[in-house]
Length: 172
Image (cartoon, rainbow, N blue to C red; front, side, top):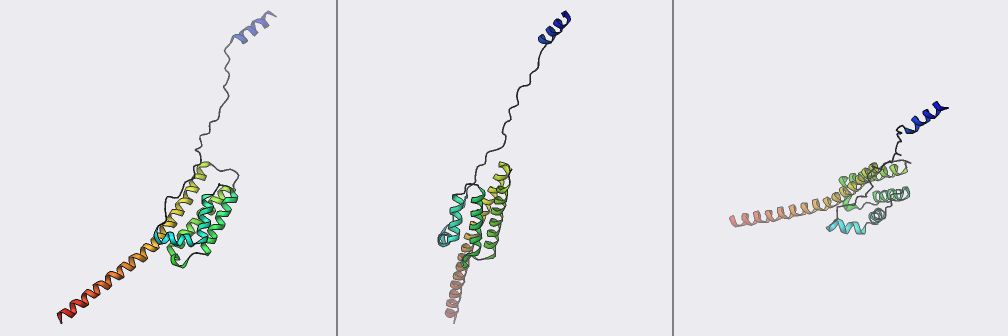
């Protein structure tokens, strides 16, 4: 009994190492939705205000709550844009940028349908979606810039031709 008592005494007096409960810290960065930095101007702005499918798409994007249902509505809106593109901007570069935007929207929708995804991956894909929208807007404005450049070039050529004709008549 004595030995048992001494043994208990040694055991109770010895240092005990208790492990502190592990607190898992969430090191994942929060999801902060990006916003478009491009603003349509001039004729591209006028065209976009009359393009119903584009306005629907922008409205869906502004009200986007990052759910699969909202992503599906965005996918439908981009499909409508593809079908109803106005002739004024129906050039290959604009169509290509619209296709890139469509692909990025569908990629984001596919990500949201997964059960588990990281905020980093969601941030990356959404940022790519917004970048695609900005590139589409740039391409829309580029169409009108090219048209204006061609018009200016024609005007300059006509003025030069008139000058040459005047010089020819003076020399005769």
